[in-house]
Length: 238
Image (cartoon, rainbow, N blue to C red):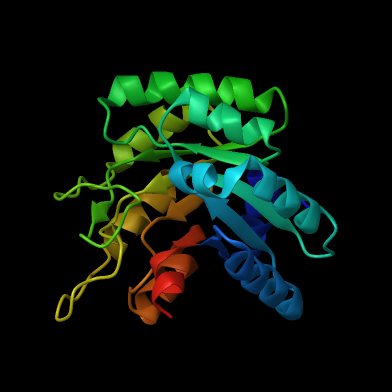
């Protein structure tokens, strides 16, 4: 079955588990995600970045939507890292049930304004919206975006941002990066910061850059309160 992100993460938050979000840009990756989720009887999120959407074409995601709708397992079809209203609307028109407006590299007030505009439009048709405050790092082998110097999410901004924008879930920056870490590099999540954010967050929290991090840290982050974990690069190097 195909549901929106708010519906899925509300259940995840109530029952204290996290849902995997996997970038599937062609049929074999998509089938692998869906068939394994069905085998495990576990909910999952199929997502795609704007450039990947354009590459695969809207026709491919019509097939994706139909396949997910006919499954007995709950799925969300999500646009990852939309940067503009136009990109988000293109995904909504293609039948996506969730979109992300990533204004994290914009000035804070501009991020709020743009995210709210997308949220107002998406909610009219039952589509959920993910926002982001703080910035995710980036490795040279990733095309998902990010910055060289991470800006950690300020817990004091969380309630203000969610209240002003109306987002359904929030991506936060606690030390992850998009891409595969180079040999010898040991990432370390700021779990104490996550605990402070979780104490005040009124919506479910999202962890970007989930690939290549130690399993124990990801597990602990989910125990603290992460409800969506993005996995992309790990799928590309297996």
